[in-house]
Amino acid sequence: PTPPPTSVPSAPPTIQPDVPVKAVISNLPGVLDTCQNITVDGSQSFGVALQFNWILLADRGDTFAEIQFGDGSSLFSVDASLLEENSGSLLRVYLSVLSSFNGETSSVTEEVFVSPKAVPLVTIDGGGFIEVSTADGLLRLTGRATLPACGDGAVEDTTNSTMVYAWSMRPSSDLPSLAGPDPMLTVNRPGVVADGP
Image (cartoon, rainbow, N blue to C red; front, side):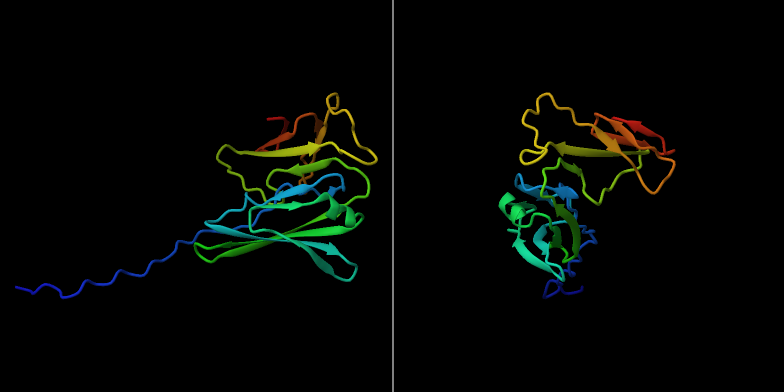
């Protein structure tokens, strides 16, 4: 008979699965004012065990200077006083994510102009990167908007105010622009646009 083994074979090395990592910035409009704090959202980034690195940079003419860093969370808050200091300037929000699961990284940069005048705060859920399932042949986008709270153009009484959303899609020339009170735009596979959910 064969004698029993004197040692247990070592386990094969663990291979981490190939999990994609993608940095996504949400809740950052193209233009904002200095009326209120803003919180930029990176939670729609995907990957496993993500670490978040935020940097806010301001245009200084010949370069962009770092003016604020994140605290490592998926949310990045910018105080209105800092926006006021950079009124009339172009800011860049940089997000880098690292997966401690497999070491993969991804980064994204979004730009925002700080207007000296009050403007509505308008964003699209998912920011500049939106992943959709084509199982039902529909693309649904959701917009969010709030009225300015201070300065020229501020709305004191928002109870009687109506927000009208105007959507357009490019580069396809056969998709019309839409205007209406609904913050959702639905597009079906043949390219027909429906206003509302």
